[in-house]
Length: 529
Image (tube, rainbow, N blue to C red; front, side, top):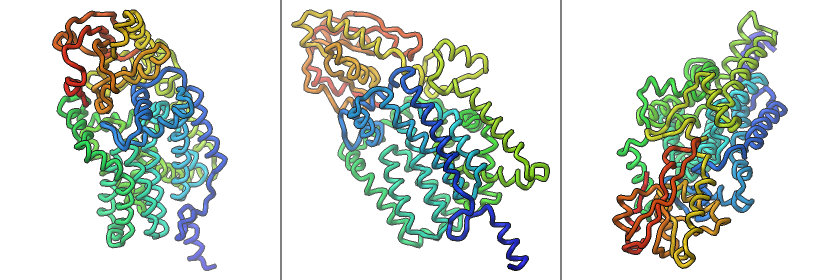
């Protein structure tokens, strides 16, 4: 072999071969260890608090399977139905986000390997994903958000393989994953838009001259079509819901600088150097072959910032930056003379990340009692970010929304069962939001409570369940409106939970004698936000 050839081989030692097969070995053992740790963390803490407000809603969606819902795509209902078939217990329900989080760790390591990262780079990327604060919190709850990064990064993995192999037929798999991602959460549409922007800004725009990317788009639309038909049939309720959120100013809107700082915080300030290195690696560094990924991230970040998206809207796209950043930092350490052939810089980096990740983890996991959580947060000077303008609680909303539901249902049951039998049989339960309705439906059966009714979100379509109540027990309804529709209104009790959401700490009323059948005034109950 010539000297020139030997130099060429040495230069490409950490890069994929033209065939797309990296010369480095995938660290199966390390991947198994990190994914196992991730899975064990979430499974062991799955029953620590209680059901999250949205989880209660999704369980009812699982009981009313459909191709669409007012405020979300249909896949989460199918996942909830599966959990119900397995018993519906909290550990069973949260097994799914735990598995999704563990798979994301493995997929990030797999992307790192495909980008040419060795065992250290793979470990650094996987460990980072394991310790990202918002991922720890997100994977503790059964929501659409925990599955979204899997679908997006599955698409990114396909893009990496297309770039490496030149095989445009792989776009079909991109279309499958994108379609499933849309059936999980409609925001995957934004992801598709920014991938198109990334393609147009790079040499990969030539893919539009081939049939495969267009076939992939048709595949994604075909998978989404049941939900599209549902949306058309129901006059696009999701768009109406989003419009209501915007005009009512429900969500907190951050200016650009605060939005950027919030991203650094939720992804952990210590890990900032890794994902920003990944962005540099793709755009300006040794990974310019994958410049498409860098532009895709910048386009999505800028779009979410311009649209005043919540901080967690951006998080599904970060794992690819951690993969690229791990490769870049490993390469930098290899080129730094003082570190060549030495393990201590890599060991020090891993140790530093683990220690700092462990310090913040108790604030992201259902680990501490509420009192200890607040005390620990104060000790670290941690101020949890607010997502909504009317959020009222002593600690972050995801934790507060897990407290008080069984107690609330117990109070409703006491009121219901205290009524005379002839009155009780004609009494329904009407709630102001889906959390209360879901709690009644989950915990109420042991008290003999009827199915809850609500005009909030998709509950509006489920109507009165064929119930024709004469009287109502109401939650989050005010006396002014009740006096308009009832012959008399009684304050039965007041619910209060110090660690729950403040909006639930309200009076519970009994409406005696509806002046009109509830079905006739059902349109008044509609509340989409």
